[in-house]
Length: 164
Image (cartoon, rainbow, N blue to C red; front, side):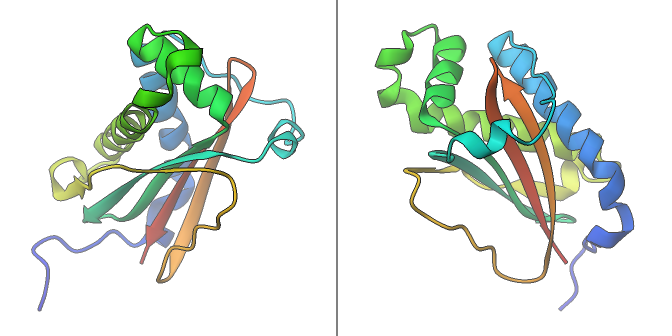
């Protein structure tokens, strides 16, 4: 059975997707959180703390894969505080919904930046994992694209695993 929309081969275009992924992330953080993300001087900032929050959105259609946003609990609480106007200490009840929505917006913004994907790529309902003691393995062949940024001097990693 053939799909109406052939999938995009990740090897064809993935080098030019990294800046689009970064731009999509920066735009969502600026629009929704009134926060500018910065580029770390080195990877040292990302080795200090283990991610405790992973928000994921699946992509299906012309592009198949998973977009995830990883950060520590303090970063997630700050995201929620800026997004919803609540005190970071009171952010836990909204953590999953807010982080899932940020991942959803980044995925949607990204797919709309890639020519030909907008309407031919669907997003799943977001999934959020809390806790730091897990490994995420995506099945199938995949290319991993990663963007590392700082949100209020705290590390945030956005990953897109593209399945062939």
